[in-house]
Length: 296
Picture (spheres, rainbow, N blue to C red):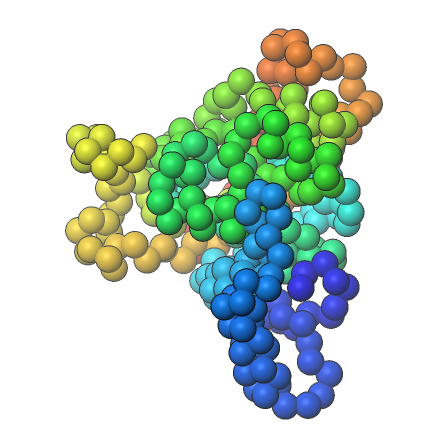
């Protein structure tokens, strides 16, 4: 499992020193199935299933991460190897793949192979199947009590303060950060003395360029928006294949909240720090776009 210090190969799996690799994989697969059938696997109080996340979710996403989006990561030294941190990122992509790619970046690229515990919107946890998937992959409701509890337990917690305003914005507004809400993430970090790490993600904006929103259909289905892209819904299921944009993820310098004279109960103080984080991410996005050059 991740975080055990094992050396990993290019696919993110623990390296096998000699022996028959395929034999080992078959044996591991059978052992995994046996544990799933018998229920002999750990799940925490939030429903997080680390084994399922590593063995199923991460493996299914690696081809996208490595071959399709060709993700490049910088600034990982700003994420601690142990103890808590709050990662705050920009949100985009019509279908929110940025959170999953961010999780995989920490699991595969960080020296400590850490799990990212994402904070999700109410809509996610009201939706059958999606709710179960989110819980098992480590997500929980974006509320201060859950966030503070995870941070006090030393977890890496991730939040996208733009919410659906960010992930559902039009392609014409790409890389223009939306409002960061009321800054609840700042209060959680301040109350727990947790460093805030700004995260800037380039690439997600282009995977499903949003050019329209069929609002009556969205209301009928009870979803935040019904996306219209150059390929969806015109090409049916084929239109759900993301475009192969080039991704860059940068972890910025941490903000030490324990050293700040900021009142977590003062709305103006909280909003001011949230706006500082937002501006840091926005400026970094501009630099990353220049560094990336061509979109694909």
